[in-house]
Length: 617
Image (cartoon, rainbow, N blue to C red; front, side, top):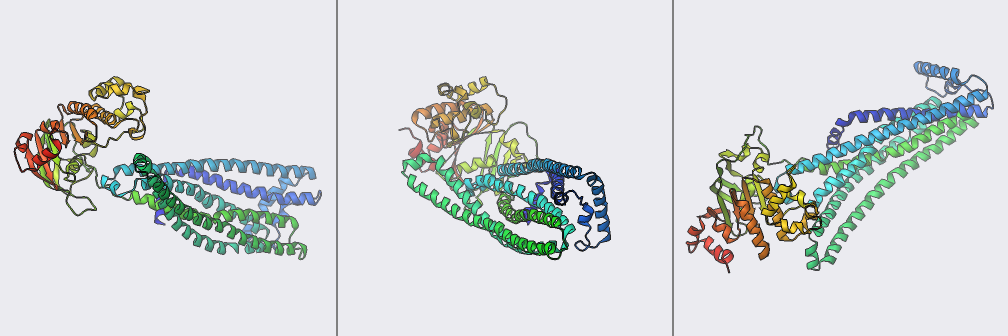
């Protein structure tokens, strides 16, 4: 129940709305009971054909009520007040008053039912909104290493499917926790005032129902966990195949992907049927027990009316009305444990994410920085991933002065990208320091560090938005003139003007309506608009054709002007112009110097890489 108690904490901000819903539910239950209870004097008035039958005679029968003096006094006071109001005048007056009371009771009952529904939905939707927002906010705090180990589809499923399960449970739980118990209490009270013996027989249903509810609820929780994992796999497959549809079609893998998807949907289908069977059996089982008890009540009560003459027919009918009002509530109560177990299963998966410690944290007392003044130093940096034993970086040290260009060169897996990722604090080193103007970046707010950085990578990330909004991503109130200016500097303006709606054109998810070179130029325009003092260029031209590469390279050269720049394996002209080239191999810097210095070392790795990759053909 630890998970459920944690879920309950999200209810606290909405206690006022929940309180109004509970009060409305209480009044609804009372008025619902009153509307049924008033049928007793109505039946007596109708069947006695003009002879008033005061409530006093209905609830004062000492053979069928619990003999408690205080209880009898309260009943007599209520009955006397009721009698003095209703049972005066001729039969039509009495009938009119009783019918009017029933009508008022039903009207008020439904008004409170509306209030209960509205405020409950307000609280329910507010709780779900807060959980979903908290989950999404926490995802943004988690380090990149977490996302390397988790399936995207499963994370999406937790925010959508699991939270939706809790949403369905919240309403059902509140209805079952407040409305149904109050309804049961009110009608049991009415039943006891009529005949405690018959009421005792009626309550035989409870132990059997509780056992059934407990057993079935435990099984439903297990099935809900399996179901949530299954829908996570389905979401993952959807995400992968839709984003990679070009590759799927290119390799004629449609049938394979369809078969894989159908396999997971079939597993989900079987599991949801199993849970449906468990859900479906609890209500009918409870109802069968209830009807069995009802038959016994009818037989025994009928005997009291017809044979023993100990109970009036109108009171017996009122008792039956009350008991049969309890049965639907008991049936609803049988589902509360199922809903609680489903909510616990979904909550477990949600808190599994929320309990992940955001390893990359802001310092308690951060040092404020307002400008980039002198330079950056990597000091004895070592790093490895959580799930790996090998060091990705091993005792790496170098300095970059403000305005310098530093190129990182090396074979794939040498640690080039990891090195600049540490500067952006996507990860933290296991040892060593990164100094920003002499200050350890761990002593600076993450936001303050990243606001000085601009990043252009090989894999361009764009959003299903307009060209204008993609270029101004993360920035506010930028005039179109400024966006056009940076687009021209990025060699993007001409192709943008050829788009259907120019700067207001939606470019599709991940910019799929644009070519690779166009997407890259938009990302450069985005970096130019941010205008950071430090630029990170990670393989920004490696996947482009010659024409696009020339346009992008021109844009990159403009982007590098008067900025401190980290360049990873760009074309030769960029590397040659770097102030310092660092050659990495297996996480260590094995060569450093300018292009002219390194090219002269005949057996050096840089010379080999130059011969293989960078030389002009």
